[in-house]
Every structure is written in C-alpha cells, then in structure tokens.
Length: 305
Image 1 (cartoon, rainbow, N blue to C red):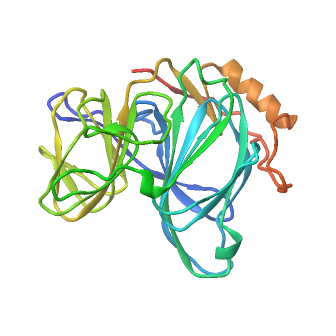
Image 2: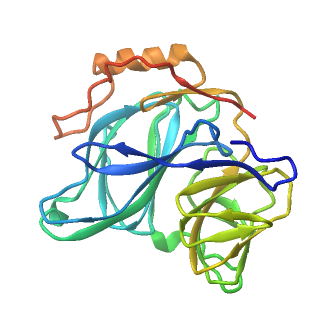
C-alpha cells in the first residue's frame, strides 16, 4: 500500500512463502503487488534461516534464465553452483556469485555432497538484476568473488560489507551491469546507518532486529523503499542486521515469467520454446531439469519508474 506523501517511505513489501522443491521454503519478497523493482533489482528470495538435518538437501534442479543476473549471497551454509558453461563453484558465507544469463543460461543450485550427511544451517539471499537493454540478449557469463575481496564498511560502530556496486565512497569488485548498490550491514542498538545518497532508488530489508526512520518502523522480513532524493538514516532500535539495495531505475519496462526476465513478451515466448526444445547448453553430468510450467499465467510487468 502506498504511504502518504509526507512519509519518507514509498512502498512496503512483505515476503510470501514459496516452495523451491522438496519442501524447501523461501520468502519471496520481490516482485510484489505494490513493489515491483528497486533500481535494477526485480526479484528477492530470502532463504531460511533453516536448520537442515542429515539427509535433507537443498536441491534446485537445472533450470534456465534469460535477461537477468542472479546474485547469490549466503550468511550460513554452502551451495554448489553448476551451469551450462561448465562452471562448478562452491558458494560459501560472505562470497558472491554473479551469473549473467544474457540470451540464456542453465544452472543448478544444490547442497554439496560433503554436507548432505551432517547437521547444518542455511541462510542467505538470492536477487535478480534486470540486465540493461543492450545486454539482455548478450553472452552468458559467470563471476565468483571471495568474501575477503569485498570492501568492509568504513562507518563508525557499524560492520558489514559492500556486496556489489558503489556506496559510501567505495566500490565492490563484483562486475555489475548497471549503477546499483548492495550493502550487508550489522548496526548496533542506538547507531544510525545513513542511506547511500548517490542512488535514486533505495530500499532496506531488515534480516533481524528493528530499525526506525523518522516515524516509520522497519520490521524483519519487510522490504521498505524510500522517496528519492531524501537524506535519510536508519536508527537501530536493537542490534540489527539489515541489507540495503537500489540503484538507477530500469531503462525500460520488464516482463517476468517463471525464471525469465525480458523487455518484451516475444522474448519470453522465445525462451519458453527454447527450453521446451532443450536448446540451451545443459549442466554437464546432471540429467535432471525443471520442466517448463504448464500454467500460462500472465507475465508480471515491471514498470521503469
């Protein structure tokens, strides 16, 4: 629901539960009915936190993407990424996987074999960034950045990392495709975290804790976006873990259907037919895949403003 014009809050989006398969539930925060995008970010899944007993696995079978970059970042647990380009990469806490789909890529995300028979905890985020129009049908690519390569936040009393993009006078080494920022911060009670002011669209997602901006409360599990141009700080009412995202607005409207993001419904249909015909390079050594959904609900349209 849109807030009153006097509020610094523009939109609020609360996640809804989605099953990724075999009962592994996530909170899908974006897209939402009243919050379609924040800068180029058009999708957010919050994984966990969940305790996984021996024998239980996180298994997202091979599936395709177009027109986007996936950004995978975990605080607890490990995920093994495999894709149709031949990359095999273990995602460990604090590291970043940035996979550019371009005109099409297939990947899987699974619990590593070494972890399947032990107790473990999973907790992280996956976001999608809509690629700029001149890159949405480009070549697929994959980039992994270790946790130690990410800039530490240089803010008094606040710890965390700049996961991607630019903020607070720093730049992440992750190779982004458009102006954006992605900050992972831990804010002690009573400390204030300023919002980066060089980006037009900005939002905060409280992972744990509670924050306040003006008269507005930010609760866990809710993505809150703010009016452009305002100089704002988020005050931690208790020790708080928060993620900040945002950037330049989309350069054109986008359509989201299943795992596809595109600037036209024609491109979505081409992707559907390509997956039905298995024209994308598949993940080597993995005979499984997620079939194209049989339902043909309307694509979700994301505006460019």
